[in-house]
Image (cartoon, rainbow, N blue to C red; front, side):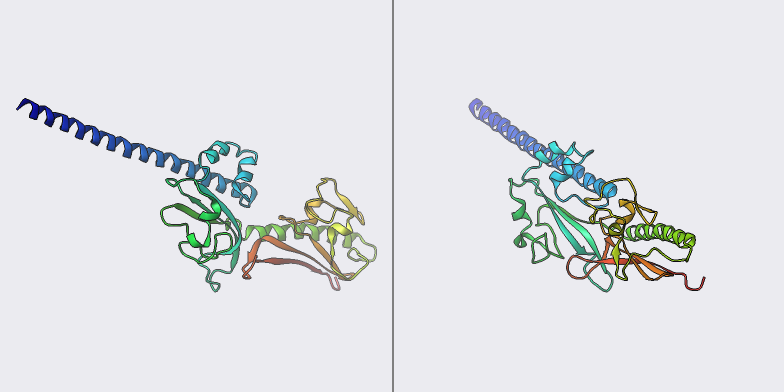
Length: 282
């Protein structure tokens, strides 16, 4: 009987060890997944913070980690290598894609986490074949869902949807005040004469560089003794401000919002903002 009892004891020990092994294996897997979920949360919070600070999403995750104040993400991204997938999808229609109630075109990013998967390429993860709710790849699809079994999210930049238009209007209002002061001080009561009836970039009239990327000097340039800076000749996003004089007492300033766009089926149509001053007989 003793050998039988001993055998049963050994079987019990083996069974207990198997149970412990299974418990610690499951526990280890749970901790592993929880750690990577924590990494994923860190990345998502950083993307939202970047959007809040700079008003746009990073083009890619390397650019995010190279931005001052976000360098702490580098080891996190290294730990998630092959398991984190990010694509900037450009301008996509807002909401559920129904034009009658979602007319806005919004900057969109898609991100996925394949935490328990082997390392894989983002091009495979974002391919049309792995789109769980559409038929196109993630960088062009209007409708996209991450593949089944992954953590995924779509983020659209609607935080400053109308604030961008408001800031452009405020900028044109400030310029109009300068031009009105010129009109009031002019001996023959006229707005500045650009020498043409065409619409002309304000930067050209002031002798500034013709693109926002090259117009970097903080020193104002003078146009008919009106100080014009790079910050007033271009709106946020780099769009130029245009000036047109119809008559000596009638002029307009025009600029386009590059952040707020209406959906047009492609990259979005910027909203044109106009500031008109028609003094008439005053």
